[in-house]
Length: 264
Image 1: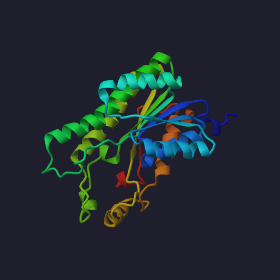
Image 2: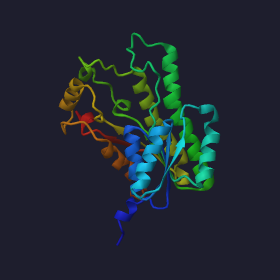
Image 3: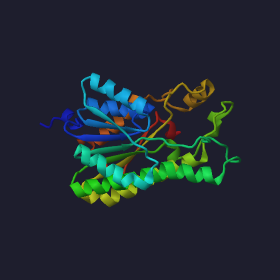
Image 4: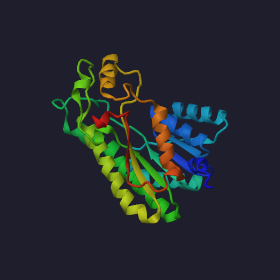
């Protein structure tokens, strides 16, 4: 009989997480470490990254922190190659970083072209180029690895602007373009690298509670069939599944984790 629980284990695997010190990235990192992976935390925040590493290590698991800026595309290929050489393999790679400019959240009327270009370059282009390089390394090493990219519910459907009324929150136009691009990018890479046993999938979370404006939370939860926002660990659990052998035949999929937001 197959040991199905063992298929969720990442024991002996090397897993890399960008944006590891963030709200969701930190939970993904903990989930990977808990599942037995040697987890490499990648982030630009040294203080938070090292603190997370210590938390994981003190809990009895294996984790390392590396300063990693996803926006430094000119040297990103070399940086990734050096990382893989240092840790001797790459079995799972998660792009969970969320780079954005200081003026993120400008209205459509106030948006300028330079801000638009910079955000697309920092976010969509970084995901694309990093995923490409990681997949090429997996192919070269003959590793049947997995890459998981973070999309969003707003990468697969239009915005409902009513939930933002009287909140002061303005969902950026670039966000939808970026996340929609990431979803289809993942499909392209899944098709291209699938013959080498490399799986590429995207996960599209709905709203995750992070002490947002109370009016926004109330408006948002009205639309969700489960009547609440999501929790970081609920996203991390799905990422862990996608990275494991339990998802060995899932490739090019878009996994929606939104409490039912997109069904109505």
